[in-house]
View 1 (cartoon, rainbow, N blue to C red):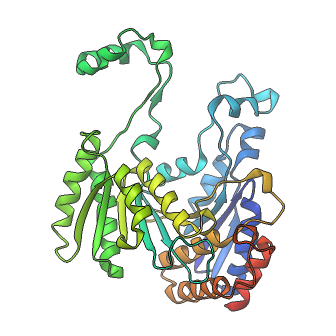
View 2: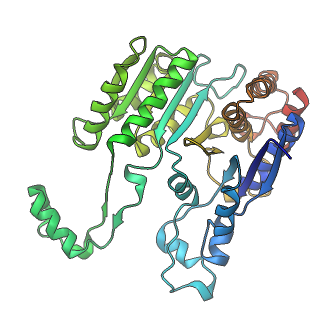
Length: 372
């Protein structure tokens, strides 16, 4: 019996392309693992009305962790229009399957390293080594939304907040409401993860990225809890910055920052900005990590126009495999893989179109596997 059972979820679009490159590397690493396929993605939404079938959830509940590639997501009306005719008009609502997995398995910590590899022509600078910790289950992505605004909810909001008078002349049918929900526990555990990572890997600072001067209650809660957590790590300095200023400082002086921590949406935005500094989403890996389970994924989208062409850069999924190996405790294999990735990038002989080359997705996978 294998030591690990790992679900492989290619999804759709270029998900299949990059997953195939990932399989080349996994085979060469010879991890003591059983790999099982699991269905997820747009085609299952269209055919079954469910982008995350229950059979996939059942598989994941038997696995150690999962590797996910990419999935298409579209707005509500467009998603319904693409359903099979027999499923339309039945009230089915599309929800991002990866967001659901994060909430279903309580994968509250989204880890997004952004490291500049020597020889990458797309680097903003060569001395960038950022890590973003993004709270993964709460905030604006929690999915508690309303449209149109229910009258009873509107009445209660008007009772509780005088600021609702600004919308007094607007019909409820013309109001959409998204809630930003933070919990004390949610703030504490994501900040603690960031400080633990900083201590483990020798980062001198943790930068909290929020907006408490305007979003006073939710960002304010995060700031207050972060200060309490920081008191337990006297050798690591807590920096606090507003999200808009952070975007500016990351472009100006990215080398000054190491570990950053933020709420769900702000962390999503900041980590994409940080990814661009080290070459773009083709180099951006992530781990959705809970206390007992994790799903690892590149942060790029499904890019359906490139699906099946095997031309996109698979480095992000290879780096996601590296994160998975670290999480499994297979740190030697993780180090070997990162060394192989770095060597292929520095040599510059195998580059996909985004790096100015003409190599394909599988060419990169084979090159990295060849260096292991």
